[in-house]
Length: 557
Image (cartoon, rainbow, N blue to C red; front, side, top):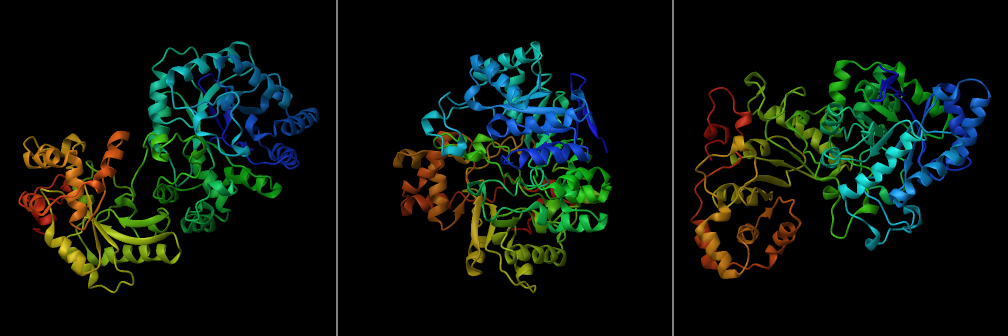
């Protein structure tokens, strides 16, 4: 396991650093002193943490003792958002250096991708007014970055980088003419938010991926805590691996991050835990451990940045819709218990895959199992335990046919599925399945109600029908003075279904929600019912077995 990694400048950065967010004055100095004494050579600081003065005193005292030289200690700090104006960057860095009692920092990061006005309050003082929250503007950020580059020129910062950047924002930023490329992207990352796509993108651009909140930030402010959030330090898989290696759960989480070639920043002011965390270098996880931990990915973000959201902006939009779904590789009774926390959890398909199965579209035939109700019941029992533990309120299934639902309901299960989420639209109305679900008190939930026009090209047939362009739908939209999408959504709702509509267009999202105001009459509904032709847009071809037809996969329904 690497104890240091190399930045693009050639500088070496220790792979475990002491995080100092939420480390209170009166505690942080002792924490830093303890960390340096046990071997930490990396401190992660920030002006907004309001504790750099005490950190500077502890660091100065340690260096005066002769146990290490300044060039052996890697110190990071961050530019706060109300100093993003190019004229303010130099002064902000100099303030940090004065507080830390240093001539330079090894790494200086922009704390978030967006700035704030100079007079914006600190988040600790209360909510930032909406009229002071600024959108992402790559041109303005580049202006800030040019001022950051001057810190390197003057020797005040040896390296500069970014924090909380997505692939989209990095791509836009790197397209500009930069003199100094970012050395680091510091982001939230842990077993529930592994950010593999972002990590690989950073690697391809020579940017080091650095993880904050690797333990799940259990002491984050109360206003950031959802009572249903999973807790990495209490995850059964983590506990099992910790018992196996005779170590602490935190050491498993930190070791996992280092095994991934990630710099990791665990925070603690507990003197014993600080030493324990540094001992994570001695925990050697094996291939099976890594696979089990990788299977815990569920896109659970603890630091959502609500304080920066614009009016009407969702958390997903702020993070550029960088979302994943629970995958079939997690449909295994011993792994699924930690998959994620939400109001509802569904098994994504009726059949599971091996934990090491590649992404859809690349799954070898010999890794595609058939439907096996007994194996699925084992998964379902593990799903039931999620309800028992309060991690989810309801559990359900997805892409189940009448035949598969019948077989599942005949088994000895305690909790009946609350939902069956399936493809359903005007060309695939699934009336028989809907009636069956209603009889069994299972909510029928429709995905792809607009026909999934933006699905991957490999799934698109050249002559397939397009619901949004169907002449009957267009005529009804004109009749009701609404959009075609609103006709399709309203029909599904009036038909007694829950409907899941996907869009990233802000206007379309609002427009789709307005479908509640569209009232189709009896003639409209009858006309739409005549459009049913059993056409599937999402046909599950990535799961077909050798020689199996689509009709066989869908039980000839």
